[in-house]
Image 1 (tube, rainbow, N blue to C red):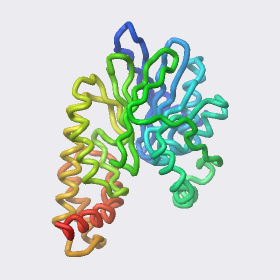
Image 2: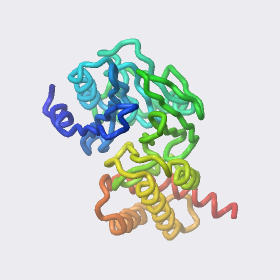
Image 3: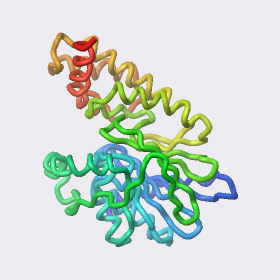
Amino acid sequence: MSQQENHLVEKALLYSCYPQDESFSIHMLTSSERSFLTNAYLIETENALVAVDSFMIVSDAMALRDLALKICKPLISIIITHGHPDHYNGNSVLLEAFPGIPVISTQGITDCIRDSVDAKEVKWKPYFAEDWPAQKVLPNQMVTDGSTLILDGLLYHFRDLGAAESTSDMYFTLGKKHSVVFVGDVVFNRVHGFMNDGHSARWLTVLRELTQELAQVGQLFTGHGQPDQPSALISAQIDYINAYRSQVVALLEGTAQLSVEQKIKLEEAMTRLFPDYQLSAFIQAGADSVATELQGELSSA
């Protein structure tokens, strides 16, 4: 195991504070900033493990795989929360150790991965080189909005959200009491939002819906950042997106793109408003997508 893998395993957090009548534990791993501080999880029940997302690069996915092997329970499925490669790209690494298990997601997320996976490889493989997985494994078991699966006796309740942070997102809750929720990147925690997919208005609509839908859920596990109570995290995400949109609107000059100087001003403004947020590189990366979206809104108003 490499030093990076050891570092990831040492950072693993374990959450085991759920009702005795539906006992489960959650192991959380976080990648380095190089691969975007992404979270992946192992849900541990009496006899088995379920992975939630699989990281972007080989070394991170190997750390998740090795943690599963260390727990000494079979991995029986992988759940993919959305179609960004830092959440699905390590599927093949897990499947090397646990062959034949299903990779679960929605049809919309699967289509998103299929439509973009080659372009993501062209963009990122030169940067990650041999740490980029050689094989692509798409989800092969579909769930639909409102569907439920039972995995090692634990209920998984799925909600297909459509476009939000990405082109297609979902969340799922666990157990009869829906005591926790996994939301992928629909909610971040003290990490700058990934705005590149250009659905910020729809994302806000989804978040307002989740404010009500998840009001009784105790703990929210996100794709980037630490878990916390849903109400606090959702409210903070709404504030962030509103602030980002407002800053872009203030910089627009009748075009659908921002200049280099305007993007620098955007980053300065967002880091000033959210000084303790990580991954500031995300700020400029999403500027043109949101500018195009907002210019379209202004033109149709």
